[in-house]
Length: 103
Image (tube, rainbow, N blue to C red; front, side, top):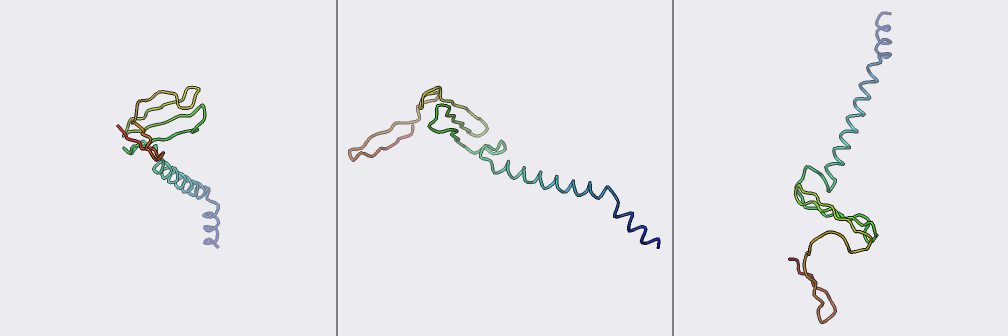
């Protein structure tokens, strides 16, 4: 009879539900860490990345990440205007195709 009473006490232990919540939070934390690691703008990598938000729109924004330096360029009203520097030269060939030569 006393063994059965001990089983009931273990089944009603509120700390067991806390242990289950800790497991759920560990899974959530692992998922968030994986999401951060797969993000191209990950602050822990030194990859070069260029992201264009709202392409072709008046509020277009270009984010350039070179190593640990992040630069923001935003179009001001017109498409194609904004801050930046010359990136290269484009040439039109006789057959109508274009050739881009980076500087």
